Image (cartoon, rainbow, N blue to C red; front, side, top):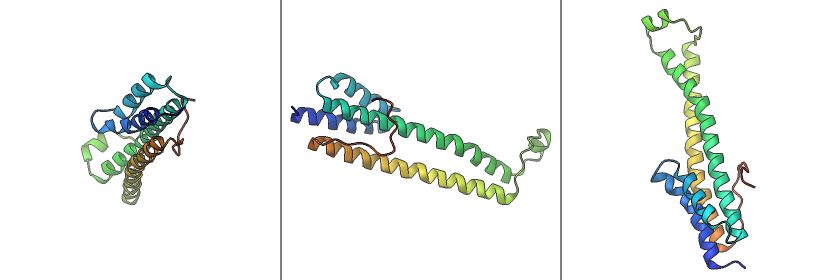
Length: 150
């Protein structure tokens, strides 16, 4: 039987992901703590808790991947556009971009940064939707989520 208390607990699990604004990795740690404590109380809480944790882990992985792809491109683009005669002549990295290539790398890096910001905004929107669904007693599945916990 689904009670108001169960709905509230599931909603709190989703909302606790916003604790990342208070301390680092709070978006993963707080839902994990609330889910671990309350997962045995009902299947509804267990399902919503798994969804919240899976979504936060997925967002973390997507952000890390985009960062690993973007940061080197951005650095090479910026460093290539700056003239460091001693540095570039002392160490031959065999990595030479034309000014146009460096500009393209910077544009790609900016677009990736915009993608990360869009993901950030969508993350907040999805958390609000999930919280609302949990409070209404409805199931919710976050989009683009890797199911680590099944």
